[in-house]
Length: 130
Image 1 (cartoon, helix red, strand yellow):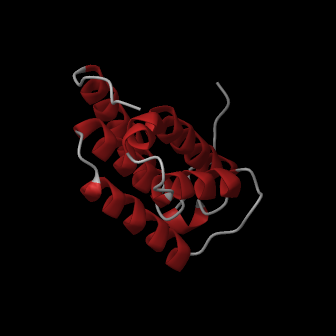
Image 2 (image 1 turned 45 degrees about the horizontal axis):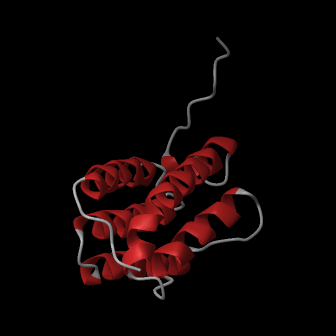
């Protein structure tokens, strides 16, 4: 096993390989369940925008700052409140948590948790008419 350096505080994590890995994994997990939201609200880009932002940052395609991350996260959570089905709500919340990974890597856990809830809720609801 290769030892990895342990950060002394969260600010030493900013923009590290592991921080970006958490962001990318959270983005991928939120993307996996986004269909539950887009099936219900195909013209609402807010959760998708949050996912794209954290993925692009993790892949060094853009920079982020706290103001932008906060806006994207709050918008994704607002979209969740407007959704009707539980699966759609949880999928949008997964996106909001994923982008929050930029601020605090532990938000990735929230993205995984909400994605799991979206998956379970999606199994228990009838298919949406197109």
